[in-house]
Length: 118
Image 1 (cartoon, rainbow, N blue to C red):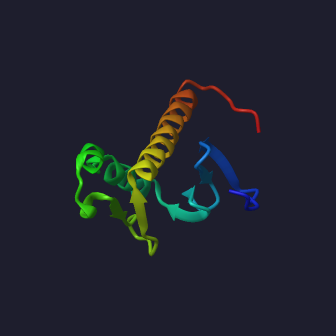
Image 2 (cartoon, rainbow, N blue to C red; image 1 turned 135 degrees about the vertical axis):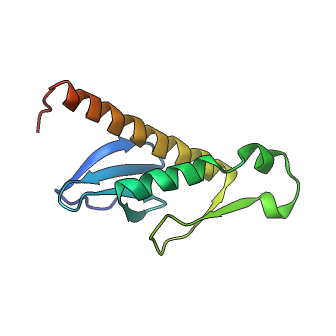
């Protein structure tokens, strides 16, 4: 996560494993994870977050079969493919859920008429 961030990107949520940015110019959310950037519409972001949530991490943790060592996920309308271990799925969930929460919070604050410093 050492890349230069364009000025049109606003940070939504950050963990030590990744960042989610919002770009009002392109109306996209940018997922930075594994030093890659994936641009997603709000709808695609929600769909990808649900996809990550449906991964059975309990099964991955308890299974001794090699087939359960990784999960392959492809964000909607993206050429990117993530091959994730159990720990990486947990980290990605934390990032996506934190971003979702912050987006919802910002939306609620705007509805209340709160202004944000630029």
